[in-house]
Every structure is written in structure tokens, then in C-alpha cells.
Image (cartoon, rainbow, N blue to C red; front, side):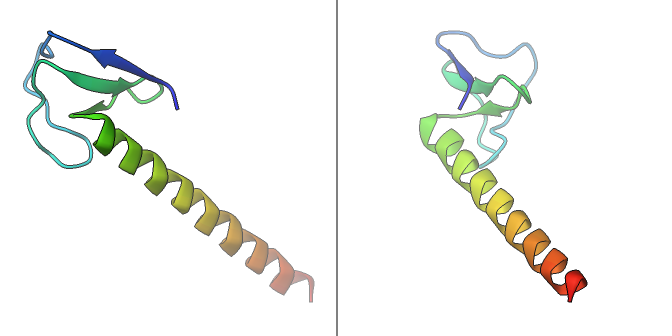
Length: 71
């Protein structure tokens, strides 16, 4: 988890949260790698959990496909 916590500064353009689409206010988080804004810590944490689950599902599907192709 790598992010920047921004306090007291709104983005230069009108932004919305990458997860819930709420307007970004004066306090928000920005993910360093993607530069996506999140309205609070809860939305960023939900995004991280979702990303981990997606990677696990992808790895499981890849493993199953490889096992099937070797038979």
C-alpha cells in the first residue's frame, strides 16, 4: 500500500473518488502508482482488498488452465 494523504488542498480539476464516485474534497488520498484519488481511507482499503482478490482469482484461473493443458 503506497499512497499520499492530502489535507487542506482540493485537486486542480473537479475529481471524483475512483471507487465510490463521490466528489473529492479538501482531504483525500492519492495512490502513488496510478495517481487515482480516493475520498477516504475506507475507499482506498476497499480498493486494495478488491485488487488482491482479483489477483488471487487470476492466479487460481491461470493455475487451473496450466494444470488442464498438461494433462
